[in-house]
Length: 286
Image (tube, rainbow, N blue to C red; front, top):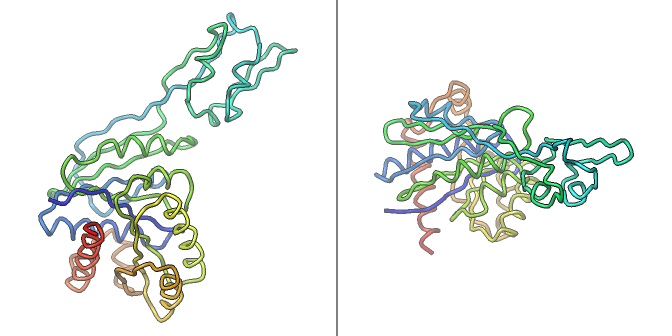
C-alpha cells in the first residue's frame, strides 16, 4: 500500500486548490487506498463542505500564555528582553507590565528565565480539530479561533493525526506564509494548483520559490484551463516543472462547486483525476 503525504497548495486563493484536493481524494479511494484529508487551511477550512462527513470526534487546541504575578514582579525587565516577539512590555518607572497575547508564541522563555518566578502560564484554547468519515474517506479539519494568530500550532495538531498506513492529502492555506510552510515542509510530494492568468503565474512563481527553498518535489495542475495555458506552460518549461493535469474552464464545474458537489462523479473528470494520481505515484517512485 502506498504511504505518503501529498500536499495541495497554490500561490493565490481562488485557483481551485480544494476542488483538486477533494476530487483527488476520491480518485485515490477508488484504487482501494486508505486516504485521509488533512484540512490545514485553518483560517478557512472548507474541504468538508464537499465531503459532508459524519462527525466522529472533536478536540480543542490549547497553548500556554503567560500571566505576570504583580506581588512577585520587581519589573526588572528580563522577560521583555528575552521575548523575541515583543509580546511583553515592562514600564519600570510606572511599575506596570503589559502582555500582548496576540504576539505571544508560547515559547515559555519569559516564565523559564524570570528570576523572581513572577510569571505563570495558563492554557488558552486557540482552535479545534474535528474528525469525520464518509464511506471510508477520513477527514481532519483544523479551525483557528477568530482573532487568534497561531495558525501553525493548529496545523501541527491536525498533522499529528496522520495515517499510520495510507495517504494523507494536505489542504494547505493559499499563499506562501508561515501556515503554508508548516503544512508542506514534510510532504513527500506537492501539487501546485494554478490558473492561466497573470496573477496566477506570478503567485505560482512565489510558491515554486518556497518549495525549492524547502527542497520539496512538486508538479503543477492547471485549473480553469483555456487558450491562455501558454502562460503557465512556458514558465514550467523554463523551470523544468511537469504539468500533470488540466481542468477545463467549464461552467458545470463552477456550478457544481457552488453547490458543494463532487465533480468526480462525472466520467470525463474521473479520468482527469485518476491520471493525476497515477502521475503522482510515478513521481513518488522515482
